[in-house]
Image (cartoon, rainbow, N blue to C red; front, side, top):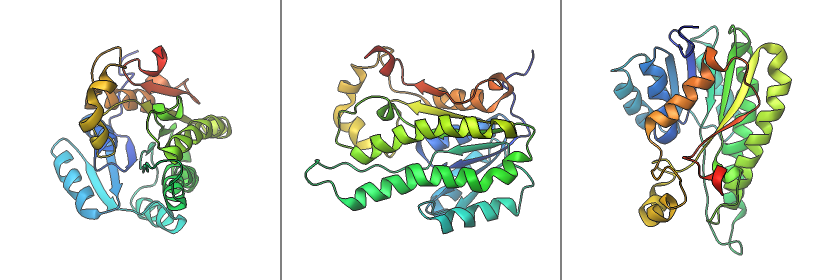
Length: 252
């Protein structure tokens, strides 16, 4: 039972991999020997992260707008031109919008749903030919604890979108098992990222008070969870949501 967590030689795609949780996962993959493609809306940001991560292994950057089907197909086409298969797809790219319920705009609803829900489904769909070429394809959807419990902040479309991702993970896991593809989700709690920067700056102590382990998540926490779900160690695990939150939601 050696090397259960070995992902060396695997090919991975991490959307939104230029910063935050995506960058944490991408670094974990690269440092453990996986050839890793990352993307972001701006090539400059993705290229900067890829340059940093290339000190540890093989990381390639692409620009991608995943809010539209055209952008998704363009990105998948670029990867398909370089690879005959991918082993790991991490659907991490996401957006958030906060506003009081009386003022919450349709644009804020649509933007979040397009990135957080629609792109997860259609990226998985379009990458299926490459995932099917893997000996065991892995899809890892990045959800949130806000999809499991009622958030304290008025992020209506975000929490709804993450709940949708969690249920979509169940559905895709059942449908894709016949292709030897596992589909799981990670629900992060409080981690440092661009998305949580303002909240942590204003409410860090309040959030820490709710975390039994008494700290904010660290890059190794997120990378470890993703490596587990990407490796042989989780070969008999599909359709689950792995909560990585220091005990937050499990002790409410």
